[in-house]
Length: 213
Image 1: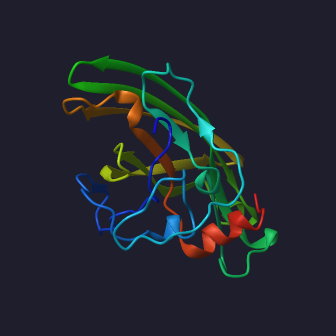
Image 2: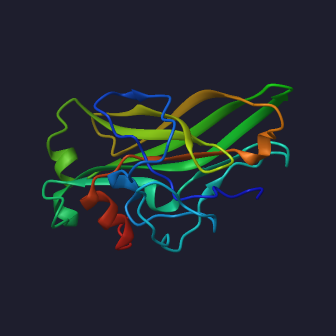
């Protein structure tokens, strides 16, 4: 069915920064515990659960292109000195997706997307205290391509670097990515989806679900 994942996502979590070529859904990564999309049938050993309510950031693309979305629960990351008991006066720093833009070029055997992601970072009390002349924080975020039958065609993890010069508590950053998806005979580009979000720990995800910003 057009415009849905057709299965619950799962991530092949390995110890590298680039994870292309995951061919089957096996188990949910920490960032995806208790998340699901669409009403399709799931397969393998994936965990079945309903996604919490929330609005995703979706790119405005023509109907013949894949849908690209930043998932609401994974659209921000906030780190504290004690992640299990987050307090505002112990906040190190945070980052969030602010806008998502993309262009799409469909060819007979592939579709290529040029993706622009904008981020905003904010240093917390602890981050500012330890700032000195410059403070730098890095956060992992992922981009997964989902096939029409709900499998992960590829997953890549990128490092978002936020640098705060002395006296600044907020920064903006923009990343540009290119994603090409091969199309097999009979496949349509709009049957694919691209899902983006921060790679969160269980505690970071719990903080987002609690309504923390």
